[in-house]
Amino acid sequence: MSRFFVTPDSVRNGKIYAGKEESHHIRDVMRLKEGDEVTVFDGSGKEYTGRIESIRNKNVVIGVDKVAVTTPKSSAEISLAQTLIKKDKMDYIVEKATELGVSEIIPIETKRAVVRSGESRKEHKLERWHKITIEAAKQCGRTDLPRIREIRQFEDLLKDFCKYDGVIMPCLSEKSVSLKNALNRLKNPKRLLLMIGPEGDFTPAENACAEESGALLVSLGGLVLRSDTAAVATLAMLNYALGSDPS
Image (cartoon, rainbow, N blue to C red; front, side, top):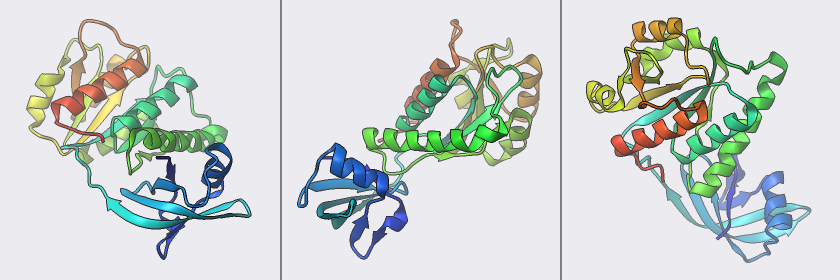
């Protein structure tokens, strides 16, 4: 069955009024007709099953037959603070982080980041990443969407460590411990922040500042992983270790 996305305010009085993009997808890409059954989610945890009632003036209206409200199955809410990297790899991370159930994605700038946000491009980047989360959620069956936060400086994010039960920071520091060791120290965290560095790793000064602010420096093994590999691998390991189920 085809699956589509609408915003919560598109659902009114038992009907779904699909937006321009999804109406085009329903009508011109999937070539669905009146009477066809579809599944729609609104990004807030609600999923609707219904049938297309009308396709007029390029607008699609769906009658709701069933509403399902899903609750998070993860034992911990994971936020990903990802250092800005090249466009295609950053897009990949946003996609896979959505599939792996993260609750929010925080793009960050670090000393060794090869990509800088640029004021004129920030909104464009955030909008593109939001669209990627929608497409990834359609594919993997999520009914909610991770929040895409504003791009932040590494030093600025340190101030927010107190909002989390734990901060995990994979790096190449000699002071790093195993991920298992770090999670044992945290003892069943409910809100967890994962910080992923650039290809050249965090600087020694960034490691020291993060550790001083409460982050746990962790090792991902004897091999040096690329930033996108480290993000996906660590999220998968955290889901397994914490009993998370991103579906």
